[in-house]
Image 1 (cartoon, rainbow, N blue to C red):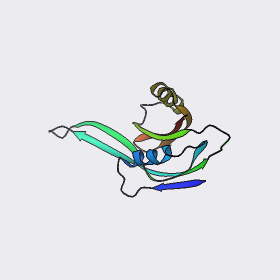
Image 2: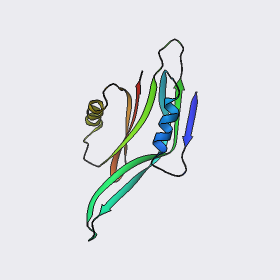
Image 3: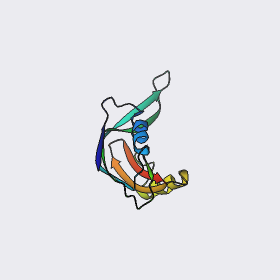
Image 4: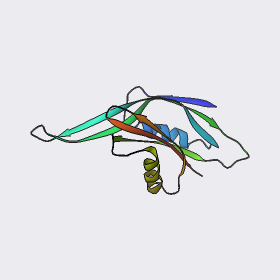
Length: 130
């Protein structure tokens, strides 16, 4: 089966809504089919106008998944996570993978996809727990 989520308002809670929907379905496989998203940037300044820090968030406009449920297999409950870092802070996907596995014990890592933007590198993570 294929299902698509479309988000028109670009809210931070969109990822939470997406995960609530996905985690409600016991599946035996899940894969991204199509991803269209954006990079949100937040800049914080002091009273003199000096830049204090910049943070990034990746959000979805549209995301489609292909999924399967096989009664012969034990179902899994999937989750989608995103992370965005200033370019150069995470040297490559393998280093991000190591960090993610360390920070998420008990989760099974299915996929990490990296997207490059001018200001930041974005990682889309698909994982599950049985």
